[in-house]
Length: 192
Ligand SMILES: [Co+2]
Image 1 (spheres, rainbow, N blue to C red):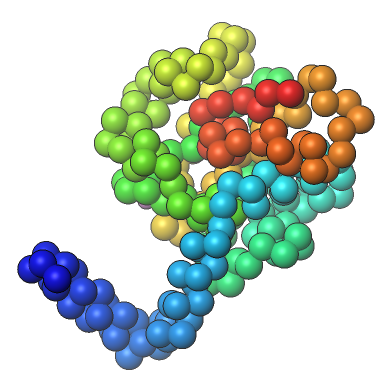
Image 2: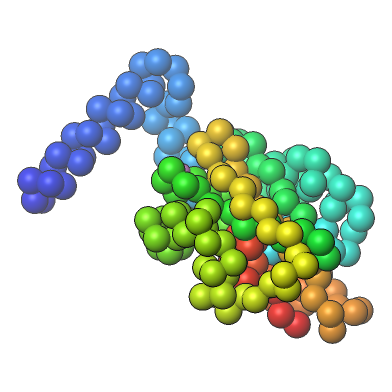
């Protein structure tokens, strides 16, 4: 083990023992949370999106309380911050960023992609959001209002994208398969 690894191990041990001492989270809870986060992937969020496209009641629940909607389809949310869902429509497009660090809805999307954590994305998503979308291959008509939403440690956000044309009659599994990570952050749009 290198010196740096030894230091980071000691820091981790100190923080976890403080969390336990203060009654914030036990070792078992931390291990469980880590296991759940390791198992999470964008496929979880994609299932929520596909369900919302097909089921207006589920869509209403998702917009009212993202965490409840996640739990309703078996995604574990215990110990996670609240999850807000931003619905894109013909007038408004949402883009999610954590300007401070890398706050990300890990329970429903898994670990954030590297670009989401980069200083360049965090700065440019605010300063030049339309420009950064173009780099992801997404050109929005000028008539669409673009809202940039800051994810924080206390409140995580995901985007409910618009269902693309050409998917009429598709079932939930087919719809789930076309929803990508970036679509739920707002950097890309689902394609049929
Ligand atoms: Co953050």
